[in-house]
Length: 424
Figure 1: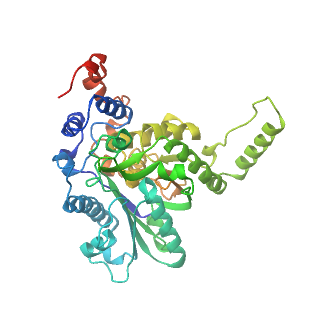
Figure 2: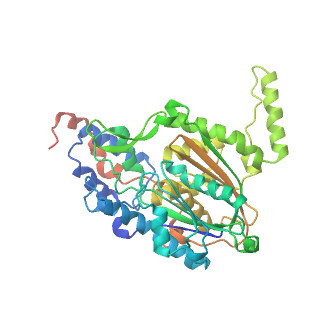
Figure 3: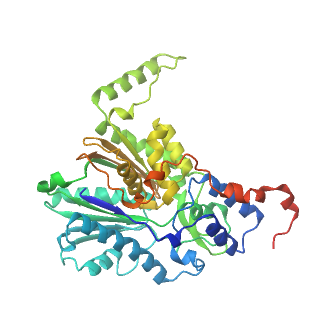
């Protein structure tokens, strides 16, 4: 990886407490039960006051978005990150050999890859790919795709653009399981420059050590736990069911079985094998030991999908609050930016000067399908300290108090007396 850039919208796009309330109150289909659900969800989401929403939602046009709204949203994210990436790396658009764009919910014609090629007047023989429908784990799919292409094509430059279309997919109905996405997903995205040119090794930030993809779409519960549907009133949205945590655990476990032998030292795998055998042969005694991931991993870059996701991954991997800090802070500051979210976490690590030459970074992503796509990077140089999207606020982090202001301002909505009041 030669470089990467994340997107940060203008300040007038921030969805603070007051802005969120205005959006909620515009939906006249909601009642007291939905208000209480939204309050509980927003308070427990892990998002702060400075996340960014689509322009049409801020302007009050979320129920009737246009094609122009979706294109304007994509253009702003893609072109601003690519402009910055080309400027910082010194690589010209005409030098790009491979282009991969992953956006799950917006697949126009001409494609978004063609839109980028047209904007930057890229070469006619560029190999371009548009990925859709892969949710929050799409960026890792794109990275792995480039890795596979690099095995065939030598001395190449590749760009991956990862983002999500929110403008045309803001849910305007009243089904609780579909309202969750409005509380979690926010505007964001990233562009990443990759190469397999050996003479550029000294300029690289990171080197991809391995990548493993797992798709358990054969499981009906897993397939339907995170899916785009219409509610009974005809409003389109993203359905998140209670089976999501079960599917995530199954996909994650299957992925680790393939990935960990590639990244952990032999002595750690041997220790784990011996402890497992001892457990099986000694009934009634707890002699098992968990794998020590830190024997082969230095940093954990987890998908900032929500507080519950972070808590679950942290517990299953035995991580400390220091390990989880970059993911929690990325979620608090930028929200769940879908496929682009991992790069905000990585940027936080870099801005905090955590990364040293030789360190291993474990990236974990979960997404619709249901998929778990993980990879491991090695830091290639010391002195990585670019603050990128954290430039104006990194000194304010980590935040000790992540309590959402909704708790203080709107806790009265849970007053039982309101059960006997008609809300108009």
